[in-house]
Length: 432
Image (tube, rainbow, N blue to C red; front, side, top):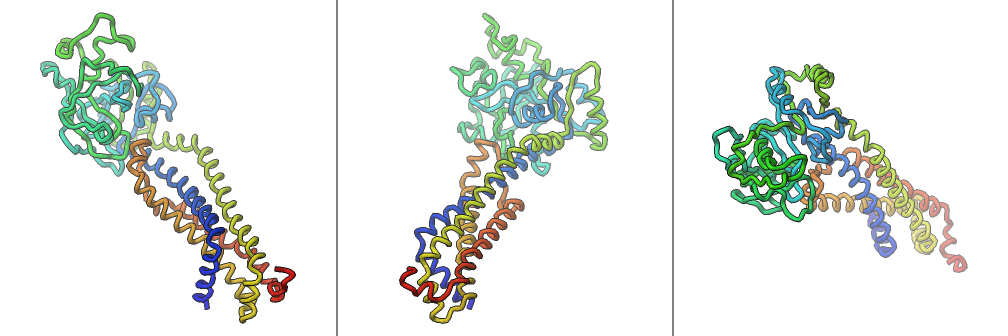
């Protein structure tokens, strides 16, 4: 019986395919919107969390926790002040600190951030499920020491996305630009080019979109600069920069990993209450929670809009079926005349609405899955987001399931009207 009704409902819907096609597109769009918002939300959270896996504290100049997190880890925004290099050395020598990674920002290469750090960064920096960085090609740059040739200063390691988008290979020479301007008339540090010595494997974090150089290399390209501008007449060739003191004066931030994480709050209080330095020390997880609270209102607005679209789509299904019901009275009457009772007609109309909803929701999920797979590399390149699998979107899938159930349930409205109709309603010519 049910198989017969399903076949009848599907053929009846197919006979009205022109009108139901638009309704089906509306259900597909609503499904993609509901699930897509949750996909973007969960992917953003996962990508942000993966980027700070091995860091217990982030130390920077006194500022808001969210601001420090954004510019030190995600290269969003800029620091107003730096941390004195002596503070980094003190942290590095602290017996409670497992390792301290300096981060110096401020320059760029064709729109990508340049990160000054130490070679230990490539061994000690962790991301995702506490994974180490790995090289696809080449090796790390060398830390400069007095007596080494100037060429050691000008070595660069590229993130996977930088190398891919700009088609760089080992041995290529690149010229950096001062500041984070994407469009410039020419590279500001063209007189001191860097050689690509390593290319990292993809990580799905901001590391992919960064150019890494040594702290001494960052100092070397600024030996003839002062207050952010070139010193007039002081054009120092690259081969002579080793004659200058290349120890950094400051760094943008320091990423700390502790030997005992139980002491993280004590160290945080010590750093922030130091009378001789204005420092901020933040826990990445806490700062991320604050960030999500900040953007929580935007999430709620987007979810509200998606829910409204889904509601309109479900109500549209009822409206179409009610309008079509007036034109299908003869069809209903024929069914009644060949033995179909009111309950059969009622079940038939409920099945039609359920079929449309389930088909639309299924196609919407399939479309989003295909689009996610196709555009995942582009999304990662443009926004630094690594899309999570759809089966991990528990909230989104629950919302889509509720949408499908609600739309199917609304099919009861035209079904009740058909149930109450009399046989002669469809056979009386005056009513047709």
